[in-house]
Image 1 (tube, one colour):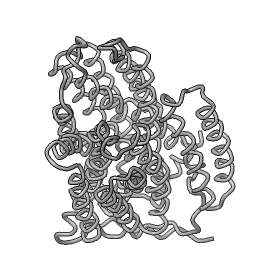
Image 2: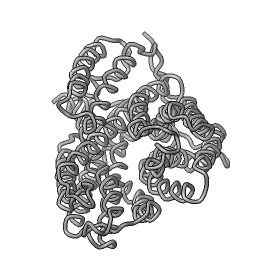
Image 3: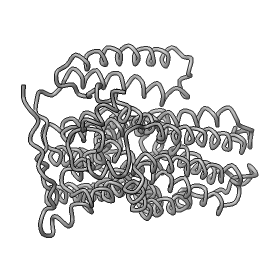
Length: 493
C-alpha cells in the first residue's frame, strides 16, 4: 500500500514571491466571490438580452451552485493527490474560460454552460487554505487562514456594486471581459507566486465515488433550489429528494468499503470533524439570509410602507460596509482562535450573527439601522468562517486538508442553498398586493430574520459541543500532520 508523502516542515518562499503568496491567494478568493456575484444585477434584464425565459435565466445561478457543490470536494481531493497549486490553477483557469464564453456569447445555453465552468472556482478557498497550512509557519498561519476565509464576503460585497456600475454604464459583455482579464491575472499570479506543496496523498482517484457524490448532490440541491418554483410536493421535487437519499446511501456504503475514498467518512464521523461540518451548514444558512433579504428589502418600492426604493448600485453600496468589516475583523478572529481556540471563535461569531438579526428585527425601516444590522451579521460571519477551516486543519491529517476543507465548504453551500429556499418560502407566504402585484410584507422579512437568527443560535450552541480544542493544545499541534494519541482517544469517546 502506498504511503502518504512525508510532511515537510513549513517554509516561506524567499524573496518577492514568498511575500506575495498570501496576497495572491487572497486575490484568488476575492475574484471567485466576485465571479459568483456579478451575474446578479443582470438577472432582471437577461431574458430580454438573451431572448429566453426567466426560468431559463435562473439557471445561470443554479448551474454555478450545482457545479460548485460537486466540484469543491472533488477538486479538494485531487489537490491532495496531484498537487494543490496545480489544481488551484486549473480551477481559476476554468473560471476564466467561463468568463470569456460569457463575454463572447448571448446564447442562454452557452451562458449556462459557462456559469457551470465558473462553479469550479468554489474550490479556490479550501485549496488556498490547504496551501497556507503546508507552507506557512504556525505563527503566521492563523491570520492568513482567517484572511482567506473572509475573502468570500469581501468579494461578494465588492462584486455587486462593481457589476451594477458596469452594467449601468457599459454593455453587459464588458463586465465579463473585465472579469476575464482579472481571471487571467489571477491564474498567472498563482502560477508565479505560489509554490507547489510537497504534501501529497498518493493513490488511485475514486471515480465511482466522484460520480456517486455528483449524482446525489445534483438531485439534492436541484430539489432544494427549484422547490419553490416547481412545488415542494410536486412529483419532480419529491422524486429528486428520493433519488438523492437513495444515491447518497449507496455512495456512503461505497465510500466505507473503498481503500482510497473520495471522502474519508471515518474521519468525518469523528466529533471534531463532523460537528464542524454541521456548524458550517448552520452558519451558511444563517449568513446567507442577510444578503438575500437585505437586497430585496431596500429595493422594495416606497409604496409598501417600508421599502426604500434603492437601485441595485445603491443596494450594493449598502452591503459594502459589511465587506470592509470582514477584512478588518479577520485578524481579530485569528487572535481569538489563538487565545481561546477556534470553537470559541465559531460560537462567538454565530452569536454575533444572531445579534445582527436582532438589530434587523428591531428596525428594518431606517437605512442606517439596516446597514448596521447587516454589518453586524457580516462581522459575525467573519469570526465564524475564519474559525471553521482552523478547526478542520487541527482535526485532520495534513495530507487530507484540501479534501476536508472542500467538504466543509460544501456543507456551507448546502446551508446557503437551503437558506435561499427557506427565505423564498417565507416571503411567498407573506405577501400583500401592490398595484395588482403581490409583494412581500415587512412581517415576512422580519420572520425570515427570526428564522436566520434562531439557526445562528443553534450554530453557536453546536460549536460549543465540538470536543478536544483549546488554544494551547491547538498551537502545539498546528504543525503536525496527524492527530495525537490523546485526541484519538477523545475522538473515539
